[in-house]
Amino acid sequence: MRIAELSRRADVPVPTIKYYLREGLLFPGERTSHNQAQYTEAHVRRLRLVRALIEVGGLSVAATREVLAKMYGPGMSVLDSAGKAQFAMVTPRPVIEDEAWEAATRHTDELIERLGWRVRATNPARQTLASALATLFRLGQTDQLKLLDGYARAARQVAEADLAQLRQEHDPDTLLETAVIWTALGDVVFSALRRFAQEDASYGAAAQERPAPNGTPEKPTTPSGQDTSGKPTAPSEGQAGRRR
Amino acid sequence: MRIAELSRRADVPVPTIKYYLREGLLFPGERTSHNQAQYTEAHVRRLRLVRALIEVGGLSVAATREVLAKMYGPGMSVLDSAGKAQFAMVTPRPVIEDEAWEAATRHTDELIERLGWRVRATNPARQTLASALATLFRLGQTDQLKLLDGYARAARQVAEADLAQLRQEHDPDTLLETAVIWTALGDVVFSALRRFAQEDASYGAAAQERPAPNGTPEKPTTPSGQDTSGKPTAPSEGQAGRRR
Image (tube, rainbow over the protein chains, first blue to last red):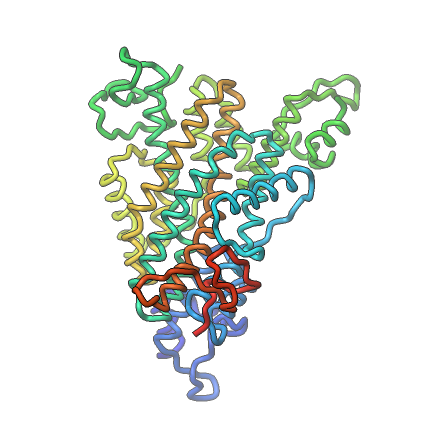
């Protein structure tokens, strides 16, 4: 196919495709004349992957090039390639090496030790976690540290489901693309579902603010208080609605 | 305290503090002379909150102002304020309203319906989830949709643990700050733990690639194959190591 068709199929503008070609995010087509080239389904697929990495993973062009290099580097297993690509997907955060950072790093090491998980010293998520914990230490919100083990259990569940799902895929290229994209997308999906769960759970919490006669809430309350059927409701604004 | 002391205590440079004052992210100190003002512990605390929202939540100054306005708006319960602040923390993504987007929106609505969760139509996480699912549809990775229910269960677990932890806090100001900051931080923490779990689980997967005599792997393998003790190992690079 010509570049115009490639643009239509992958939903990427022609100038962007040319930019990706110059930046090495897309391999060249087969040249058919001085100023024309033929592209294939493999180009459509690569373009979609690049767009997903940039738009969903929030990667820069340089980081995307790095991820692709890790994904399609020679002589490694698919899971190995996916792992390396995932390491390249983490943007290092600036670190302030204060006392909070030291405590957070120690806490991260201890957590991994306690879980008994094999996590390489080079896994960039160690720094991600330590940065987040350092913020908790700086804000004095150390009670939240008690939540870590529960978060780890939940993370383990989804990681194992991810892996079981990946094992269903037998085409190595698809497996690799899925592993890399889903690592980024799964975070976004989980974050959205956590917001949903927070909203739903907070209705129950609002009900608990006003204890029922037997001490536990029988039915969720809503801001208007008009629907006490216990069925899902969708108030117009606010959260955990009951005003006080 | 003077502004220099405030700067030291909150670890925020004086020019940044002045900028926040101009932008309304920090309330003014008590003016003691033409060019001096006195600040209090409340200023230290607010500054730390603002920094956390900007650095961890990745919010712009304008978005931070909006979140603070929702947090400290009049006449609402703490959970209500926290919920509104959380709605303001989500940055809307550009939406391409194609077939994939329509399918993703429908899928999001059906998921919420199936879960029986009360999620307001205005909850911006609906758009976050639909955007992520639209990417799956565009990439043809619809097998990953099967993972949604498991992700929802995991999200529900952490959301309930979050809420139980929040209930331990009786000071309304601390509760509000914790609820808002932890919403952002918890995503980062979960994402890091998911990377840890992926790495650890992938060692088991690599072992399964080469079936043991009885059909199940007895011991994890490592890239070098030198350590077969089954204990956690930390190879120097790559993931799920075994080359093929």
